Length: 102
Image (cartoon, rainbow, N blue to C red; front, side, top):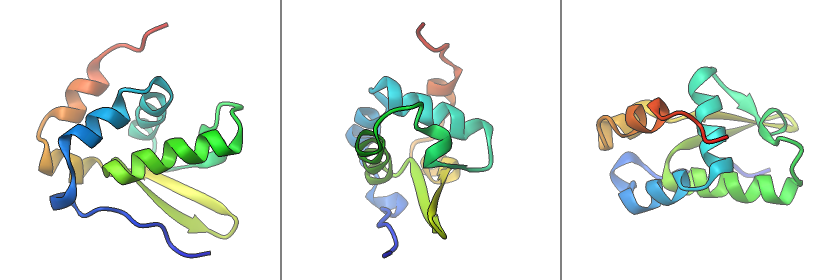
C-alpha cells in the first residue's frame, strides 16, 4: 500500500481547515485525536460505513489536520496539532474549547 500524501504546513489553507472542521463527524474525530496519541480508523469510525470514514479522513488529511500512517493492515491517525498551531496560532485551541453539540 502506498503512503498517504500530506500537505506541508506552508500549504495549509485556512478555508480548507475550516471546511474540514465544519462537519460534525470530522470535528468529533479531531476532538478524539486531541485527547490521545493516536487512533486507528476503526477506533474512530463510530459504526459508520468504511467509505464514509475514508472520505472524512481524506478531507482531514488534505486540510492538514490529520496525519495517517499505515501500520500493517491498520491506519494510525494523529492530530497535526503543532503544525496547525504553527500556521494558525490558537485556532485549534478555540475550536476544541467549544462544547460539542448534542
